[in-house]
Amino acid sequence: MFKKILVANRGEIAVRVMIACQELGVKTVGVYSDVDKKSLHVHMADEAVCLGDPPPSESYLNIEKIIEVAKRTGAEAVHPGYGFLAENPDFAKACEDSGIKFIGPSHKTINLLGDKIEAKKTMIKAGVPVIPGYQGERQDVDTLIKEGRKIGFPLLIKATAGGGGKGMRIVRSEDELEESIEGAKREAKSAFGNDSVFLEKYLDKPRHVEFQILADEYGNIIHLFERECSIQRRHQKIIEETPSPIMTSKLRSRMGDAAVKVAEAAGYTNAGTVEFMVDGDLNFYFMEVNTRLQVEHPITEMTTGVDIVKWQLRIASGEKLTIKQKDLTQRGHAIECRIYAEDPSHGFLPSVGLIKKIEMPIGPNIRNDTGVEADMEVSSYYDPLLAKLIVSSENRMESIMKMSWALSRYIILGVTTNIGFLRQVIEHPEFKKGNITTHFIDDYFKDLLSKRQTGLPLNAVISLAVYDALHSQRQEVVRFKEADPHSPWRRLGRWRIGV
Image 1 (tube, one colour):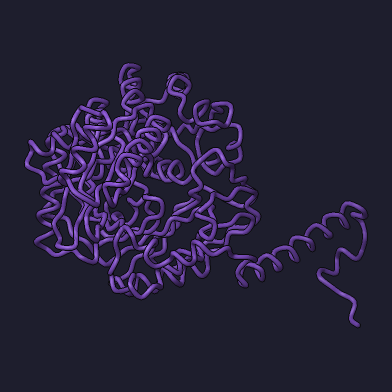
Image 2 (cartoon, one colour):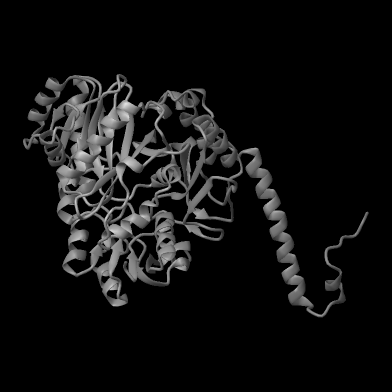
C-alpha cells in the first residue's frame, strides 16, 4: 500500500478520498486554489499546497503544477476524484512518465473510451449492443444530414469528445436537423476543442442505468450491480438509486455480463462505470464508460458493503481483487440526492455566497458526503455541488420515506439550494411508482421551472430568523466581555429584565 498520495481535487470527493486514505493509514497531500484555502478538504489533508489563482486552468486543471507538487511532497500516487483531470489521458500519462501511480485506468484506456466513436466501434466488435447511429469520420454537414435521415427521427446529436450534456441536441424533425448539427458542432468546439459529433437513435421512454465495475491488474473483473440514474436536469444526474425499479434477475445478469465484457474489451483496470440506455421494452444499449469514480458510488457501497475507494487504492498499489462475483449480493435499497447551490425556479442557475449555517440530518443508515461547512464561500469558479445525502432502508418505499424525512431536516443558509426541489421529486407519485425516465423533470416540473418563485420557504425563513437571533446574542456577549471583562454581571449567566 502507498505511504502518501496526492488528491488532485476539491470538495466532497477530495474529503471522501482522504477519509479512505486515513482509514488505511495513508498520508494525504491536498491541493487548493486561493479561494479554497478555508475549504474542508484543505483542513483534512496531512499537508496542503496552494496551486494559485482560482480559474481551473491555473489550479485544478494545471497538470504541470500538480505533478510538481506530487514530486516535491513525495507522493507516490495521485487520486483524481471525478471531474477536472479525472478522465484526462494526458494527465494519466504525465503521472506515468513521472513515476507517479495514477489511481485509475491507463492513459491508453482513457483515450480509447474517451472517444465515444472509437469506444462504440470497440463494443460492436466485442458483441455489446449499441444504439443505432452514425459514428463515421466524415463530419461535413451534408453527410451528417444524410446519415440523420437514414437513422430517422427523433435522433440525438452528441459531441465525440463531450460530456455533461455539452454539444448535445435532440432533433425531432428534419426541419431542425441542419441548424442543430451546426449548433452542436459550435458548442463542442468551444467546450472541448473538437467539433466532431456523432448521431444516434433517440430512444422512447429512455432510462439511464449504469453498472459499477472493479478490475485489477491481473485480469480479474467484477461488477457491483446497477444504479438507476434517470432523474436528471440539463443531462446531469441529481438523484440515483439502487436497485433499479425496472430490474429483473435476468436483465441484471445480461447487463452485468455486458459490463464485464466492455471492461475486458477495453483492457480496463481500477474502478469505472459502464453506462447503458434502456428503452421502454427493456432493451439495453451501451452508451459510454466513465473511467473514474462516480459521484453516485455511495449507494453501491451502502447496498453491497464494498468500499470502492479503498479498492481503488488497493488495486493501484498492485493488490489482487479478492471479491468474487458469485459472493456479491445487495442488501436493501439506497437513494442518493445531490445537494447543489442552485435555484431550480430559475433554470437551476448556480448560487454563490457565504454559507452561514449548515445542519445535516443524522440517523440510522443516513450518510452525508460533504465538502462544505459554515463560513465557507461558494464561488462561481467551480461546480455548485455542495454535498450528497445518501440513505438506505429495507425496501424502496421505506428509502423514499427516509429520504423525504432527511431532506426536510437538511438546512443550508446563505446560498440557494435545490433541497426543496429534491424533496418534491422524491415525493412525486410517479417517482414512487418507479415510472421514471430521463425526461422526468421536464415532464412533471415544467410549471415549477418556468414559474418565478419569490421569497424563501417558511421553514427557511424561521431558521434564518432563529440563526440571526442567536448570532446577534453571541455578538452582544463578545462586545460586553471586551468592554468590561471584570463585571460581576458576567457571573449571573443568562438573564433578562421582566416587564
